[in-house]
Image (cartoon, rainbow, N blue to C red; front, top):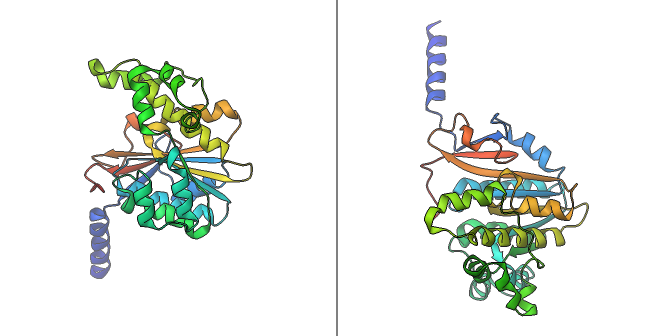
Length: 281
C-alpha cells in the first residue's frame, strides 16, 4: 500500500510541474485535440494560419500542420511574408535556378526568414509544391496609408499587376478596421485601415487566383489579417461565397489553462501560448 501511495504521489507531483508549450482551443474556448483539428483542416479549400510573427510555437506548428496535410492533400502554399514583386526570385529558388544566398540577395526577406520561414519554403522545394508570394509590396501600402486608394491610380501597369484589381473593395465598418482606428487614437487617420485592407485584398486575390478546386491552399499570415473571419476571409468570400475556409489564430496569455473571453471566436482554432515564451527575434 505504501508503494502504491508513493507511486500516486509521484505521479501527481509530475503532473503538477508539467508545463505544456501551448494549448489548442476551438472558437468557443473548448480544448481540442490536434488530430481532431487536422481532420477538419483536411476537408477545407483554404487554411489561413494566423501567427504571432516572433512566436516559435506558431512557426513550429505551421510546419507540422503543413507536413501532415501534405500526406493526404494536394497543397499550394503562400505567405504574407513574400511580396508580389518577389515572386520570380522565390520561384527561381524553388526550381533550383538560384541558391538560398541568391534568394536572400534578390528578394526582400524578413529578418527572421532563416529561422521561421525557410523551413516552409524548403519543404515546398523538397515536395515540388507551389509557394505563392501574396502580399502587396510594402511601399504601396505605405502610399495608401498616407494618401488613400486614389494614389494607386498613378501606378504603372506592371505595378498594378502586383496588387489586387482596382477599385479595392472596402468596408470601413468591419470591426477589425474600426479597431485599428481605436488602437492608434490620435495618431491615426482614416487611410490607415485602408492600407490594411489593401494587404488583405491583395493576399486574398493572389491566394484565390492560385487555388484550384480539389487543392488545399495553406496561407501563413499575421493573426490580425484573418481573425474573426474578417480581413483575408472577407475578400475570399467575395470571390466565392461557398469556399471552405478554416482559420487558426495564435494568442498569448499569462496562463494557458483556459482561454480568455477576449480571444473567443477569433478563429476556428486558437493556439494559446504563454506570454513569456521566448521570441525568435
